[in-house]
Amino acid sequence: MITVAGDDPTRDRRGVGSRLVIGVTGHRDIAVDDERLQTTVLRELERLQRAAPGQRAVVLSCLAEGADRLVARLAIDHLAAELVAILPMPPRDFRRDFRDAASRREFDALLDAASRRVTIDDRTPGAGGSDEEGRARRYALAGAWLVERSGVLVAIWDGKPARGIGGTAQIVRWMISGTIPHRYSPRTRGDGPPAQRAPGRVVHIDPATCQVAYLGGGPG
Image (tube, rainbow, N blue to C red; front, side, top):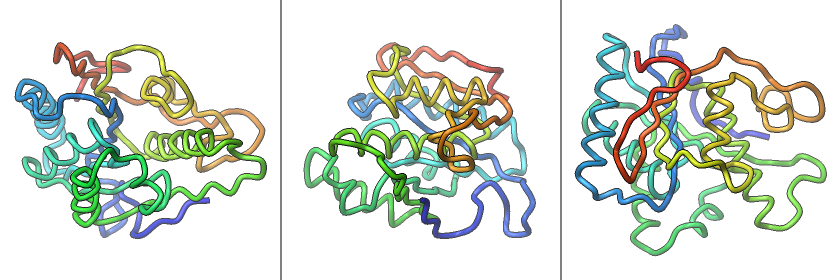
């Protein structure tokens, strides 16, 4: 179901869990060039890093337009973070979701900068339906993979409910509750009870107001 290039991003080369693993989710249509938003995101990333002295930051990002790329770029540039790309589908298919050639070049540059790559390959019998439904399911699967491995989630979204599967609000809910529906969890696919993990922390940043809220616990 999942193809992975590289080892477990939550562990260092000795196999010890000594990394600050930051997942990212959020809207695609945010104003990524807004200096106030950039400053807010960077401040929160630096806050997380200060709370984890001696731990190298690792960012898990799907590299979609908007929030995914903003956090990835800031973390690489200012925290010297390692980037792990969590792709909901192979790159050639994923590029269809991007608005123009400049966006595709940005995606390619970040993908080249990633030290590791995880690609979702959904082969569940009867999965999807229409192409749109299948793509949405892949985003949900990628979000579940990210939630299961992140120590903290940075979510840049307006706080409104998700409009479909794989939406930001859904990913945030999984992180805070520690519960991922069985059919999406990378560890337990198919019918059955939901997969459980320890409830996680979320740094919620409203892209319009730049207000910050800590959900499921403090920032560190």
